[in-house]
Image 1 (cartoon, rainbow over the protein chains, first blue to last red):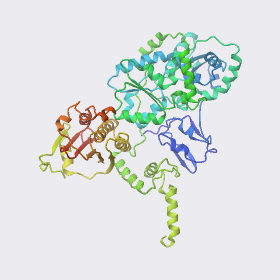
Image 2: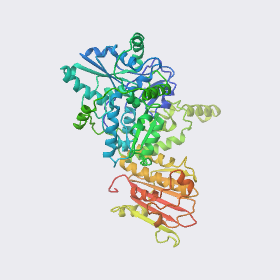
Image 3: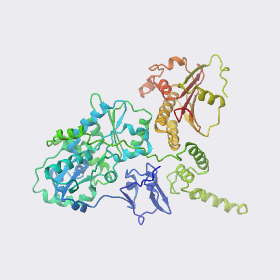
Length: 429
Length: 177
C-alpha cells in the first residue's frame, strides 16, 4: 500500500471538540475515531462528504477553502461558478445581478458551469452508446462518489464516466482560449472555482485522474456570500446586461440532470444523499441495476444544492433553480470549439486506481486469521454500538483492536461490568 | 464427506464445474475441509426486504479479506441471485458462507418444495415464479443461469416435495490454487 498523504478540505478544531462521537457515527467510511477525547480523521479513508460537518454541534469540524486574496497572485483572474450558487438568493435578486456581483469581487472573467451542460449531455450520451458493455455508466461529477468507489466499490471503477467534470472542462477550454486571445502565459491566468462543498476543494488540490494543470484554487460559496451580498445591494439599482445560461442550471440538481440524459435508448437513474448512494453502489455491484444505462450520483441531498458551503436549504435552493430553468432563456454557447478540444482528447482522464480501505491484510491468509480474531473479540463485546469507545460500532472496535489501533480496555461498557463484578466478589481478584 | 453414489434415486442432482477446475473442486468436496470463517444468514420466505442482506454481508467480509474486485463482483451476483431464489421460490431457508484460504463455498439450504425439473430450471427465461414475485421485479428466469455463469462450481440437489440444496464455489484466483 502506498503511504501517500491525502489532502482533505476538512479541519478539526481541537479546542472545540468535546469528543462526543456524533461525527464518528455518521461517517460513511468509518474514517473518524475519538481518541483521548478528541476526534481524528484518517486521511486515507475520508471522502470529503461533509456528513461530519453537519453532525458536529460544536463547530469543531470545519470545511476549508482557499482565501480570496489568492487571486491577486495572477494577472488575469477567472471565476467558474457552480450552478448551485444561483439557488442561494431570494427571488428579488436576479440571476444577472447575482452573476455580476462576482466581477465586483475582483475577477476579470466570470464563467458558469451551466454553460457546458448542453455539451456535457451530448458527450455523456455518446460515451454511454460507445460503452454499452459497461452497464450502468456512473457519473463522475461528484468527487465524493468517485472517492467512495475507489475506496469501497473498486470493482465499479470501470463503470465511471471517464472524462473531466464540467468545471474542469471549462477550465481547460478557458485556459487555452484566454492565452490565445489575451496573449498571456499559462501561469499568468488564475482560474478559480466557486464551489458548493468541501469535496470540490479537495478535488481542486488533489484531482483524481487529471493529466493537466487544472484550477488554481477553490472558494466556498458561503465564504464569498457576505461580500457578494454587499455588491448586490449596489447593483440592484442598475441591473447589468450579461449572458446567463438558465437551461444549464440542471447540473446542481441530480434528478433534473438525469432527466436530461434520459432518452429513447438511454435509461437514467438519479440518486442523492450519501447513504442512498452507497446502497445503490452496492446494488450495482450485484448487477441488480443493469437495466440502467446511466446513474447520476451525488453525495449531497438533491445534488450540489445540498453541499455544506451553501447557505440556503437544499430544497428551497432546488425550487428556485427549477424556476429559473423554467422561465429563463439561454445565452449563446459556441459548442464548436469545445467539440474540437474533445476530439483532441483534451478532456480525457487517466484510469483511476483502487484505494482499498477495508482490507485487514494484503495477504489473504493473514487477513483470514485476523478475521477469526476479529470475530472472537466481537463475541466478547456488548454489541450496543454506543460509540463510547470512540469507534463507530462494536465491529469497528474489534477491527481496530485486531489492527492494533485500540485495546479491549477502550470498551466502557465492559469496563463497568468488570468493576461491578469486582465489587460483588472482591476475593476473586 | 459426500457420497455421490449414495444419492437416492429420486434425488435429482445437477453439477456444473468450470473447465479446468474439475480436480480442485472434486478434491474440495471429497476432503470437505473445515472453513476458516463462516457466516450464517436466515432467508425468510417471500421477504424481499431482507433478502440480499446475507450476500451484502458476504461482500463486506470478502472486501476485508482483500479479494480481487472482479472475483468479488462474481460472488456478489451469484450470492444475491441465490438468496433471491430461496426467498422467491421456497418456504424459506438459510445461507451459509464458508471462507477458505483459496475459495468461498456458499450453501443455500431451503425448506422445500423442491425443483421439479432442474435441467429445465437451468434454461434462461424459464421460471415458475408466481404473480407476486414477478410484480416485485424478480422471477425473470435468469437466476440459475446467472449463478452458473459466475460460479466456478455449482451443485444443486433437490427432491420434488422436499428441500433443495444449492452449493456454489468461487475461487479467489483464476487457476483455483
